[in-house]
Image (cartoon, rainbow, N blue to C red; front, top):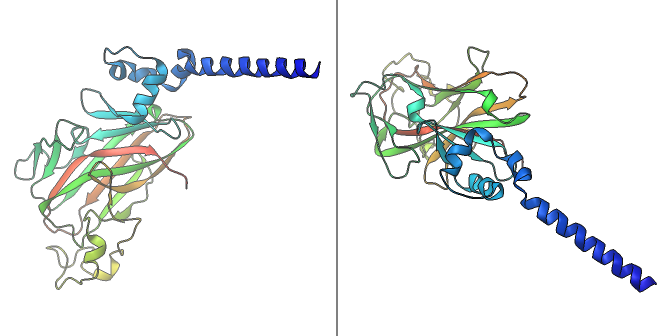
Length: 270
């Protein structure tokens, strides 16, 4: 009798395990994790299960909104991630050929990127409605960019970045766009920063020291990213979220910045 009960229990557990393994393959289960608004672009005519579609969205961003935004899912949490292409950002003087130009490079996921030719005042702003983000999620926004071999103007000059509700009370902080900022910091500039000797950063001591928190980080895809800031999306109300990068106080000429876009993704908890 004991052997019979043991055998029956083993068969029952095997049946239960088989049931749950089958359930894990059901499209109705996996469909809960695939945002319906992105189904069209994600499928792109392909026939696949919802599980396959979910895993694909975790591994490979898709381009949406006529090429102006990319979307994917965070592999660890399943939360929504986006990158706003440079074309979807508001860039001061972007229509002036002497200041900016639109160009294509193979490293970008978008058709065009914005290359800085020459400006004194740098202003880049992106907006996203929090309704498209995952609720109850802490997000971090990053500027994704490259620099050319002839880049200058960012060596000792930080930029102000912030994230928050549009026209809200956002607190700006300073970050560096120079990938070599931490190395250059060992050298003191021999003259005032910028063309305005009495500008906000004429006194070198008020400029924050480069650190892991305010300097660019090299990404696996070959680009650099610098953190703009964090925002917790409660998901209760729709908020127009603004992300901004500005340098309008130093007055020094800048060139050689290539902007792919602004990326917003869930904060990783360590």
